[in-house]
Image 1 (cartoon, rainbow, N blue to C red):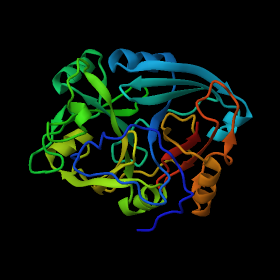
Image 2: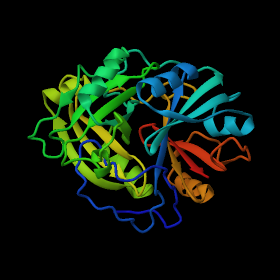
Image 3: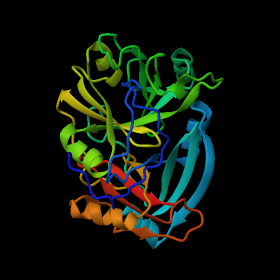
Image 4: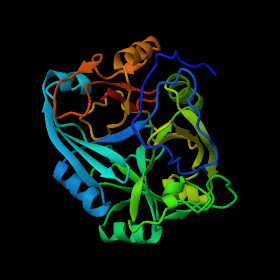
Length: 346
């Protein structure tokens, strides 16, 4: 396996352990020589109405708001690749994991395509672990959330890596897909099985649809330094009703680094009619979701990534002295399918 030079350093901010939804915790993680990704951090989501989004995530899903700030100016324009950007950023935490909500007060972007499907390449969700699926689903029903699945699904026991997992897809007020997930005793990070009086526990992983797993692995594994910690093929009526895609047959690859949520690659073996990432997508469009990662040296990381012809969103590495931001340097780029990644140093 080809690995990048030891200078590559993307430290992804996250909390290890919570391996992706479909895999047991039997794989030990070792830090390969040359890898620069050590943690995965918040998933950033562009929203149209911050107050509505904060209310939804706090009141319905028990997230806690930890910061609320507005940023603008040339540095922000360069980071997001959006001229005239004036952005309200809110961090929200659930357990040890977090999300970052971004509302572009100016300029306003476009809504998520109304005919989006779970096999479109712009699909990305966060998987929220719950202590009781029935109670969690009842909470979502009381709050009239929009279904993306037909209902909670129990994955069958014939699938060794996924059997016994209960899962349900739904949407937030801006149509971002979300998942609630409950692991059986023999699967998932041990922390998800610790006694708790909380219903919504934390974020296990973010899942993205990819066109070709092998191409994505060259980016996430060989370049960034993620470990493959689980693989599975999921199909059947339960998977179809979970994804709400008739004939859904998925190749699922679980990736993880030393800290934070994992990343789950979803390749649709069938049907293969999912649409590509919009070529004209910008950070102020609601379809925008970025996985935030942290590194010790963004300048070296950017040089290495530029050498691979990676597609940058930002105009180079952006330095900032703003006290209300949680990073000192950052840049955004895209993976092979167009999913944004934000690389930052605190």
